[in-house]
Length: 364
Image (cartoon, rainbow, N blue to C red; front, side):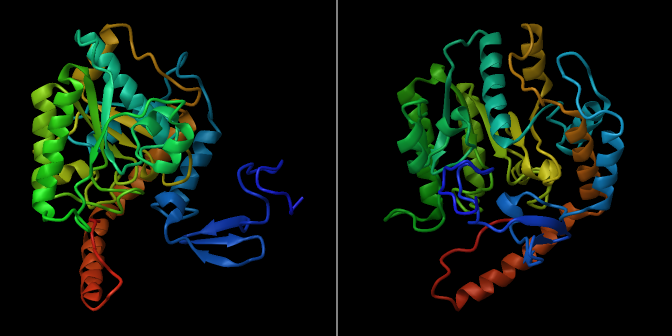
């Protein structure tokens, strides 16, 4: 069975057995395979495990909740971990956010943000708003709606006939920018291109604009000049467009503030999507956080027409509550800020004497 070709009847159907080592256990920053070999989990897979493996406080919370109830459908029951986590999350997120909706991961949360924005537009009489603008390159998830807002050539070649690919605008890169531009003038061009695209597509049809405020998979920790964020906020407000920050990778304390959005106080988004760091790899969980004015309007018009079997799962919510407590009580947000600044400074010094390093960027 170990020599089956990729696509054969193995547990991971997309990859042949024997290609990867089999993990046996984890401890702290290390993973161990079934042969006893130790690996430094430097990237925590797809940037997930903020607290390392086998965090005692999180494991206790997991056990305590599992001994009470692991599942109760959100269609029929409220559950205490959901309420506690929602309150904690919006408190950490600042004064502009009041509600949280929990799903099973980042892609689901992206989809939920699109559907919430769409239902809000309908509830305020703007039924023509249906297009979500995004940037190129970008990655917002692997489900069909999230894919439509992403810009990945391989995915587009494979799946574009199954899902309408949404309009894209250029990302304001800080490295290898087009000829005759510098970092600031290219960011200005990208913001101008955003407004031109709105006008060309028809402002009345544009529902939302989604970006990663700090770049992830597709743009490598990219941070645009500060004025860019202010400008896109102004443009969204001018045309009544909902601004969505995809903080699946950057949120939950990783950038030296709980939300990456906090770095630009004059560019507050309307919706924020969180996932990876929210549960730190201990359970699947994603979230959309929203102000009351969006949620209340949708609620008055019959409620949010969206949901998943594991939405607001009590076990995952209890685990995330423990994760956020650890992040807060151990000062990990400030630690990310300080260590991040130290790391960036050191990398910039190394880059001065390197012919293979083109750019050092990021925060936290």
